[in-house]
Length: 82
Image (tube, helix red, strand yellow):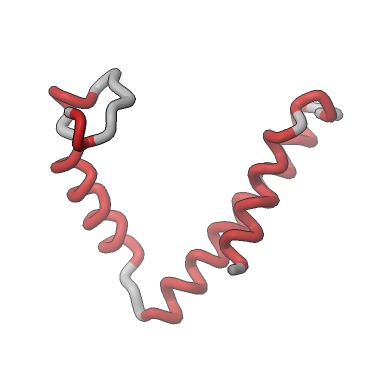
């Protein structure tokens, strides 16, 4: 739940573009919220005993098979449509 909550706070940084006080201030807030999301993701992975680099490698391999560059580059089609 915490990952979703923090991800929502990160998205708020981009929701109201007219309220932007300064680029530096907005960038700092984005960095803080992104850090919160990453911290909770790392906590979750740690609690599961997961190997984060291996999780990433596995996911990239799945995506590579689903979206081969020759077919997917420049396309927004879902893998079932390629």
